[in-house]
Amino acid sequence: MQLTGKNYIAGETSAEGSEVFYSVDPRSKATGDLPFCSATQAEVDRAVDAAVAAFAELRNYSSNRIADFMDEIAARIDGIGDKLLHTADRETGLGLPRLTGERERTTGQIRAFASLLREGDYLRAIINSEGPGQPSVRQMQFPVGPVAIFAASNFPFAFAVPGGDTASAIAAGCPIVVKAHPGHPATSELFAIAISAAVEAQGFPAGMFSMVQGAGIDVGQWLVANDGIEAVGFTGSLRGGRAIYDAAAARPRPIPVYAEMGSVNPVLITQAALANRGDELANGLVGSITLGTGQFCTNPGLILLQNSPASQEFIASVTAKMNAAPEGVLLNAAIEQGLQSAVSQTRDNPNISILTGGEAVADSDFFCFRNTVMQTTASAIRADDALQVEHFGPVTLFVLCEDQDDLRETVNALEGNLTSTVHAEEDDLESIGDLLHQLREKAGRVIWNGFPTGVAVIPAMQHGGPYPATTAPSTTSVGMNAIYRFMRPIAFQNVPDALLPDPLKDENPLGITRLVDGVNTDGAL
Image (cartoon, rainbow, N blue to C red; front, side):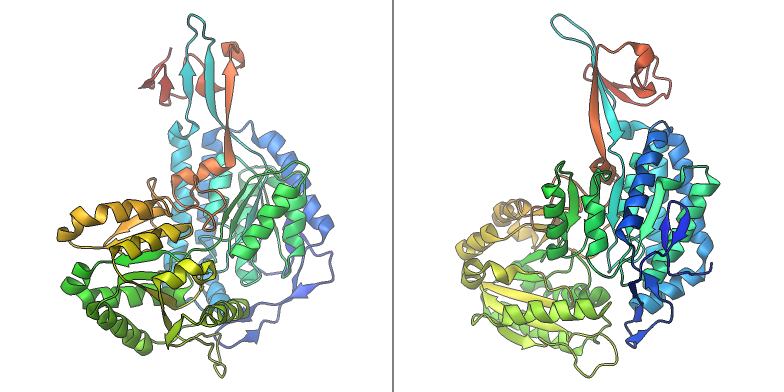
């Protein structure tokens, strides 16, 4: 696979613009040799036009045909081999073990969606028969049309060009235009080569897939503004996600934006849990904070404790372990600078104490920020929403509450998050229930005696949450239900059987499970 530094527009490479950028090795800050061309507006528009044309054909494809295409994509990614791992490692510094696992997760979720399509039940076919005063109404899910995908920086495989947003949009039957992340452009191009080859091998319309590069914001703005785009999937910062959301809402015809933007993932630890397994909790918490150099959207960034000698001892233990933990590599200069800005904003609050860290490592050969522990009070958190800002890196903030009422008031003041966690003991069950369900209102996933880093790609997973964690708290970006972001229900009233789509026909030719007059059945009517 020969890299070109070009954009991939409906099966063809293109480099019409004069603006270029380069990949950077975060371990050495060395710039790569290959220039990558930022897409022009004309190239973006051409990619969207091709996607619109592809959808006119794709909407008639069977689920099985799309499933075969997804299996082809997974096989093509596997076929890249070690070149993919080494290229991504040079651009992200994430390490071969982490990237090997992420590749398996990425191809695994693509194949899981293919299996979902073959089962057919994802179409959610519902039939209500005609009766006295009631028409015959039949409903199922349909693809929304061309989707714009914004790749993330911290997961160059699983949330990037071939990641969960892409996989769920393709599974829904939608052509995609991916805005590659400038932090790993070579890795992105390898994926573009593989997916483009899968499009050709399976005989899909060329506009099924395009990928545009760009280091600035213009390319993404042009993509969202194009009237051919029907929905957007985004993983990134709050500022970036909100800008895309606002741009999509400002269109003459607004479209949905499914943006995952930022989360501090509060962790509540009871006094009984500290007494019974304080050292175990300290080790687990430090491991979770520093995993991937803290560059996870589920990083535990806010730790709620009732003020006590045991809590102070626990904070001292975590601080010492954070001091002893090695400082990791950040993905790029933008993340280092953004983390420095966020921590500086937090430490300017007079109610914040910096227990360790709090700054970038100025003389480091690699992008780096010191492992950081901060402390504040519950009243300070409630008084200043800015203290709930995400610190995207190896940083956490302890919040000391004076009593249970203070803790409840603080939980009530929390903003939306992807996760909330409770560490408690059997003796806490009677008293902790209200707090756990109070935390439920603040997050998409509630964790008991665990840590939030690590998201399983399974049907029951909910990876979303109230704003500002996401713009669409009723949806998930991980797991099989992610497909419904890019589908919409259509009901057919009194339409003749011959004109109905196969999943809604009387004979049920696909043999799928349908909800018929309130009963699940795979039989014919």
